[in-house]
Length: 418
Image (tube, rainbow, N blue to C red):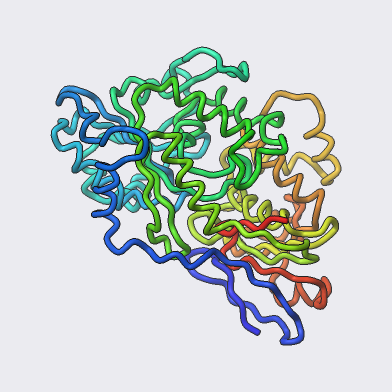
């Protein structure tokens, strides 16, 4: 029987013998909104738990900051930003700043910005890419209730009105993406990001897929955004065709909560028992740009794999690990996976990208990961404690074809749980 996974900018097809039964878990088929621009205009004027966006434009001399997602996110910024900017036409262009919510990710190239935002926006508006390493660009807002220092991009903080754009999907330790994550980690300094993403925060039981109540990561994000002045949220949900399926505008907490409830109903599914083998991807481009991002797909599969089971993962990884950041360096420093576990459990200050190493280690503790990729060679996969494969069909045969198998064709767009 033929199956396929979202992979790169297309799909990866594979066959399994007709004698093999596999359960397929996909997101609910939610159609895209017919005219998303018109619906977004309505949502801006009928927001959740706050006044319309037009009412927040107090005078033409005010400054407005609009935050957008970076290249690793499939956020439809090219649709959202023109509608928002049209609402701000009373504000001079020089008073409007666009902020790329990079967190600790690399700066995006001009070509990438043009693809994400469109030529007209890049040509006519100032774009600031947050540099979390440059503390001169950050402002200290005191400590929060978690005793973490709050550092936020100064130019962003100084804007009179802040508009956060993004899209909502289940997230492996924030519960859901979107909402205040545009600020933490998007527009934050490294000290705040490292503390918010520390081992003590992300290894808490409620810091996981689809949970916000009692999730320390989520709670800290919402606490910090309350210190950032006037915020208006513009979040959307999308289907596997990257079409907008829902629009959630208004108060950054209430509107985000509404979007999270919608996503929980359409993308999270309970299964009666764990599987011996889970076959998945990282939802294709842009989420499978690199191995760092692909940990998300492994983490989703680990939710329903049996201890000692197998995860078969396909991710293109056209940008490799990537080379920037500490993810690759930390994995390459450890010779054995046991050494990685030992380092994680040892006392040490938080490193950049340690959070992703921790999640990967939790997956590896539970299951063996077989990895298919056109962007990573076999040796690099082994150095990341993954088992390289060149055929999903052969991998299933070699593991055991008659085990209980689940296929997640859309990767972490679908989150199963026990």
